[in-house]
Image (cartoon, rainbow, N blue to C red):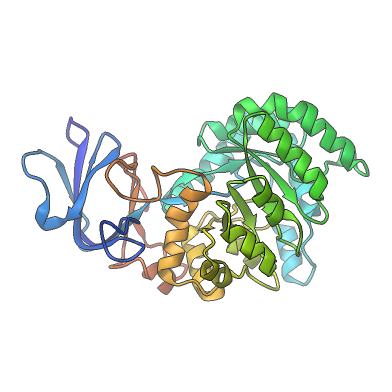
Length: 398
């Protein structure tokens, strides 16, 4: 890269800008394109034949490959101790999934040092980056006591600015049979202490976790502390999560595997994004996937995220999510790629990522393929060849 911090990327076979003003369709697709990055942002984008003259850029030729915005993974649980492979194996032999396995990770996380938690998260962030995720959200939620939730948020904050206090994931063992008491502690003590280290407040509004009233109390306490709401909802069955998220103006409601027509209608009339987590449904052997087709047809804004966690979706691969969304959720390749980029940005209420337009962050990936369709067409193949984050190249694959 030159001393002025600029780079010209040329030889782009197909470029997804996610700006219909710049190219074809909702993806703003350009052929034979080029881009200029300067000081971490996109300075220019357009046809290769119209690259501005007069600037001495470092040139990088991607040799006809497809280039996309960096993936925005808006739902992840990367601060944890231990693993739960045996639980996964049991599910694959017929045991049903419930929320109880989270307590196993709570014990392991409480027992881990900050250095151990940090090293594990750093490993997963590197893994996600190699698969194209240049922005990643990270939740706490495997402490469920003030000290471990605080430690978890501090660790997460070393790797991302998108930190979420999942104050109510499950009722911890010491509060067994006293969920209301736990919610009271969360609202009166945990949230005030932990809020300075978080951007978002989240809750698992689900049978076996927290009911509607308990979830609303946690979210309102978080909002009062200056955090913005997110919701885990409607994963294991129909429930109040979607409606609660919409009522409180949550940025996103995540999972939404089980929705009613009223839920879809409410989402379509709101600014709340439906974040779909197909690898969670895959890894829990769910009997169904979210009805993405119904949501998209109704006008709901949809995001795709990996839900990386040690119990129910131990993957950082958004390309796998895209393939599942196309195969199992009846999304088109264009819709799935948009959901994993611009949709994820919408779920984080960001307009500087998830697109490649003038002024956006220079986060981009080049595929070892001529088009983005190959992400679904070639499932399981590591197609991410190059990654740029803030305009700087980072190793994607060795």
